[in-house]
Image (spheres, rainbow, N blue to C red):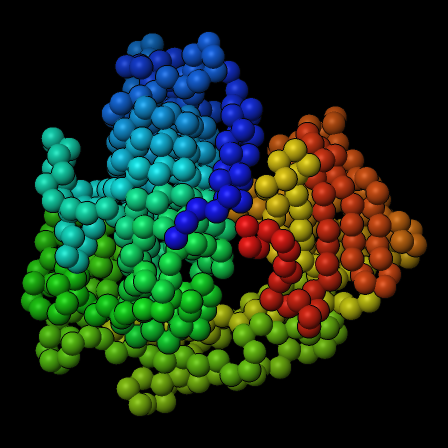
Length: 548
């Protein structure tokens, strides 16, 4: 698979834009050649930029970042790698990150063209956008597992001695720590030397182009039991050869993976046996012993296939399930089958009632529909996006969950639900779309309405969806006069100065199409298009960037 001229041009543009954005060196102190900034809590620090007079980073060779550093007699825990810290460090060959780390910033290691390996601790819960983009030589990402580090499974079984950091045996692979919930936009873009990828079971977001141009991938191991619950972009594996790359999935999930994008586009999808914790192809007493040893050593933080029941941790319940498999003489574990009738995404109008289309569940031929627990959040009195969750749990603790999305709109009215698109006038490559935006009546007689995110999803669904513990929505009070839309006030938001409020430019509501357009002037112009959600676009809007 060849890299296109368009791709090369795009990468050069990205490189130029990001180089222009890198600030001059500013750090609080330096220890052993590594620069640190003290965080707001005054007890932790972030590794940060250290640039020379020409504004290029000086990091090179093999970098070992400690769990803590001492400055002026005070000990600080190292908890973050700031954005752009190792950006374009072309002489950097390897990095070992500490177990105290919880955050890796945007572009932290992007375009480190010589880096071949990195140790990623299990404490990291998200991998942000462009974190390792352009690391073309990167062929091994390791994670802690007991007193050893593993960078593969199955026939690879690569082991690294932690004391000498020496690779004993192995192959090119990427293991995502089990703690990770989100893999950001273009996080591993253009990592063409990676051949294998392991996705942990609690991942909830794999964003646009996360693994674009990872043309060396030949196998992907997904531990996710319910692909329907993952927000996995259809572009996540762009230009990965899905006809030759094998997708390995948990036993009993093959039909679901074949149903959802982008997984369904893989030609070869193979089920892994439940309970086969050492992945030797069969379930034996060895698998139970492996689990027991981890629990005995109080080291269940990361075990690749040890979470047999998929509840997010390794416990005695997983050992019990493996023993039951052995006692029954079965090669795997039966899972309940939960079926939703009707559409999995429904659209209804304000004032209409939600009518349950139906569902059923069975286990080994037995009807267990009565055991299904339904959680319904739908409020048909106002526009919004809601979910209905269906769950059934077996006596072994195996839980199967499915979700039905319900959109409530108000067709022909200004107060309704929209797909939001937004883009940046300085960096046009950052174009975000398919963001659910809601406008509700405040005082319709006065033409007053509230919008839950006046930026159209630019931050909360675009730049920083991985920071789910921050509120990146900017609510606002709007006034509509005929077809003219103006913003009267914005809600409180920590990233804007109250004395320098946002400004809405050229706000307009098209009565015929219902589309709302405007621009927001903040530190730069953000363009916004809001398209009403209806039967024609219930699965999202599309634009030219889909194929880029």
